[in-house]
Length: 519
Image (cartoon, rainbow, N blue to C red; front, side, top):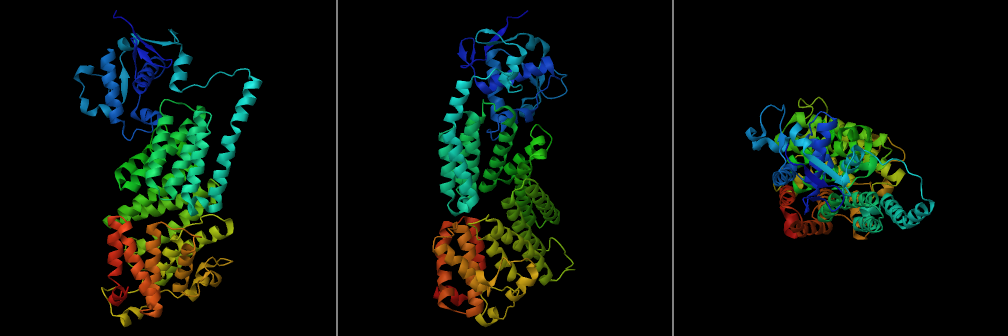
């Protein structure tokens, strides 16, 4: 019989007196556990769940097999296990599943503090089994609770600020509050919880570089740690955050792959099924991906999938008692309904009149705005106003550089009909909020921004300026205000991404050229 191969599972992890990489050692122990107590196979999904910070498991697998070779351990891959390992095709190795032969498993000896590890100790190392109950140490328990007070106080304040709207009015401030809480963390659970919330707060305020940094920190905490029963939830939320990161970079394949880890078969699927907040995040982002594909490829099936995901996301939001999530998805529903109809992706035979579709889309936007008003959530966003104004003029004819008289002959949805269309009391888009005219609504929102009560991202501000410019020119012609908005929008364009700049330049080309000349 060949000599045993020994590993020390107490930090620092060692093999033959040399450091052993934790991820590789964890996979080897997991393979041995599967060979001795399960069906012998370890799936790639298991590896993804245990190390969610890895953008792709390919590199992790490659390093692990290099370590296995150095340790003299032969590990196989693929199913079923028929061929000798030497004959397996390494091109498919990163897809798994992985396995150990009986001979290879028999040679492995795992030690904890120099003594042979039993099954419970192996499962503790793997994160498969909780510690047995112990008699509590009252002094240590009181000390831990006292030291944790600063952390929970800071975390509570950050959550309160976020619910008060400061998460959007001053996103960096709320994210910084979560960061401060993470500095007071006393254990891995507290650290991961604060970092998860910090990452999402940065993302909501469009600070993607800071969100990415917090996500990397979270990955380092998750790697090699365990949080008892909370581990799958953290792994799922980290997967959601990575999906949003991919989406922000324009990497749709990466975003869809992350969502597939959650909703498809695998160890994270129960979290998706039973945690409505995770399910909402997946469905909401999935709808955005479907919407993007539907518009880019003129694909009615993807448009239908987007509306289906949004409807299910609304259910998940109410199931989670997250009224802020509900208002968010209601706004997306309203905008997508109009956008898909306008593009001919739904109702291609035009069974519904444009005014009927405008009313239906505005009702969803009205529900979102009503929730914001009545529940005090969703502050700091101009999207509801932007979507409403864009839908209101959505059926107006478009032509490049139209004469001013022809431009003003257009007939957008009348603001006087808005109250009846919404059928909500009190009306969320009321005259008291500036909705006596469409231009007045845009100007009121811009004034909120100019006075610092509603700080907007460059993209939000550019969209709002476009709508203000359109309706100001439609109502008052070549007014000083319209020309000022045109000038401000042109000055803002360099701050936007290339695709965004192209959109606004195309929209500006549909306005009377005198506006841009005077601007």
